[in-house]
Length: 271
Image (cartoon, rainbow, N blue to C red; front, top):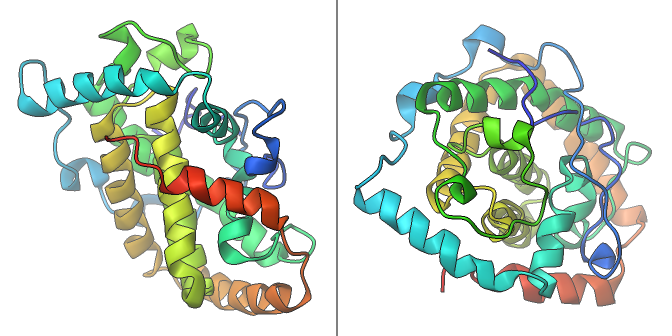
């Protein structure tokens, strides 16, 4: 079902808000994102990610114990700058701004309306790709197995939303993959930041390592399917022209904030 789920989407309503590392020292918006266009690109033509992804880990297996160990080890990030970055990355609606440093320009609905509309239209496709395996596996959030701090409230709604795969990671990695196509010379920087955006869910303590990894696989499956859509390819071509123009005209993101963000993005939460 493509229903709205806490912790995945409540709304890509403001593909504007958020902000990258410039907000790390201050207050950041809550995770709130609209699904945007009602139908998405693929509908029932979407790949069945439940059949494609590996099964969620189960108690007593190596993957389950590895997830537990990683959750406990990453509680060390609480109240660090990386923790603040994870709080910032809760806001799915800020993903375009969060990728600004990586692409070298702030993309907005004003200078990149087609790209902004694409990002919003992904919502239903990401919801389907995420919710179908979530509903089947019903993997609990990591803090429900091992108590520990999280960067967001451990609400009843969040706890009721299964862990595997991560919808945040699916969305962030899908947007990163698409943007890497639009600015291929910046692909490495874009995907490093998109990876960190997803790993913020691990740092935050609301997803397991396997949920984060499966979220990236989930996004890759989805983007492969999107390329079979004529409407998606048409929007992609239009967005490419927008991004090329925006990179020539700006506005450029703050270089000091970008340098700080890059240092945090390259730090591994797996050590």
